[in-house]
Length: 143
Image (tube, rainbow, N blue to C red; front, top):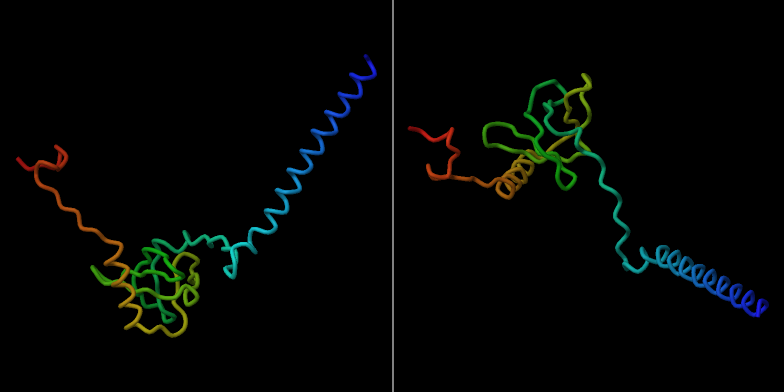
C-alpha cells in the first residue's frame, strides 16, 4: 500500500507541475502574439509626460511673450494669448526657454491655422456654467 500511495503522490505532483507549465507557456505565447493580433495597428507607445509644458509663459525667439501654455493635446501645445484667444502650436516647435522656466517657440507657425485649432480646442473644452441664486453656496449669495 505504501508503494501505491507514493506512486500516486508522484503522479499527482508531476501532473500538477505539467499543468502549471502548460498554463505558463500559453500565457507567454499569448502575450507575444497580442501585438500581431491587433492587425496593422502598432502597439501604442506610452504617452510622453507633458506636464512640464503646462502653466508656463511662451515666448518667441526674440523674447516677446506670446501667452501662457494651458494644455497639451494631440501633440500640440495650447497657448492662451489673450482673454479668450487660444492658439494650438505643434509641440515639436516648442523648446524649454533659456531661463529653464519658460517655453520658447522656434520655427515657423501658421498662426491662422494655430488660432483656428485653438478656437476649436476652446469650444470643445470650455463649458460655461451658470447658477441661479438658490444654487450658489451660502457664502456667495448676496443679501
